[in-house]
Length: 382
Image 1 (spheres, helix red, strand yellow):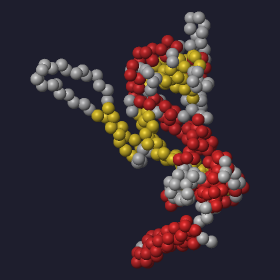
Image 2 (tube, one colour):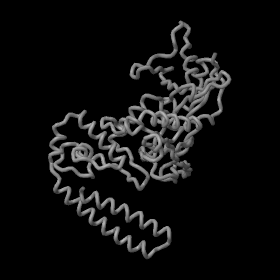
Image 3 (cartoon, helix red, strand yellow):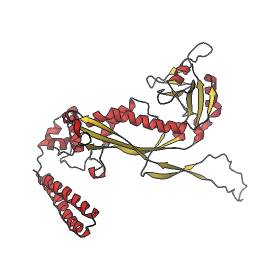
Image 4 (cartoon, helix red, strand yellow):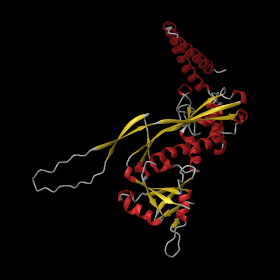
């Protein structure tokens, strides 16, 4: 067994003893143990340096000779082992921590996991988030149409600029220029945590070719998109709806009700019932008013404005009135994203089922910005 592995076990043992003594208010004993812990950590760092120097470069050479698919498979296996708290082989370390071009393999290069078990779990590395984003694309995430901001804390405020309808005032040469003031607004946000526990059979996890991200990806992303959409739709539901029976009402909403500054980037959000009713609209020559978007497959436009369709299960039709939200969602809704997916593992939670439970957590918050950026229609459907 490597010296670093032994020292890590000793560090964990002494750390638990320190916490126990502190809780029992045995502070003198805790202080002695703390000194022992400091010494163990120093020994661990020294042993790690020695092992890095003694490490053979055969693993890195082997990685350089692999194709992308083989390296990706090794990275999946390495990520599984890291999440499960297992030691990596030299080959797995080379695949996971190194792109195969550097002369050395270190734990500080691209791919370093950004959290530790003591903080609750492992964050999925940025380079592996692409897989989860691919799953997201299979659904209809309203987040993509909001103003997404990377939140740096759980609570916060952001200054905003209000509307300006005033005019500049003319002045004669050498005369005093008119003075005016301007009021800034402020948007408050709160980031909340949303999670799911996904039991996975140990037999499946033991398969070296299976990625934990593949196991949790589709289920996690579907639930994440559903949750994000629900919170955004809660904001939109606060708008007062106007009755609509046909395409002329939608044209009026775009041309008159909506402020012209939002017209250029306006989009139409509706459900399946609303989209079906809109697809039946025709002009005086019986030509469909919805035209396919040549740039985006299976997407339609009305007067050049994209139509985003949500499932009836998410955006409901009430009393044969399908909601149509029209405008610029990016100006209406601010989405504060605490970027990252955290994965923690328990082998005891489903002990009786021979399963490992994966706890996945995402954190975000939504808040209303400019209410005039969106308007709501209630379209009568059959």
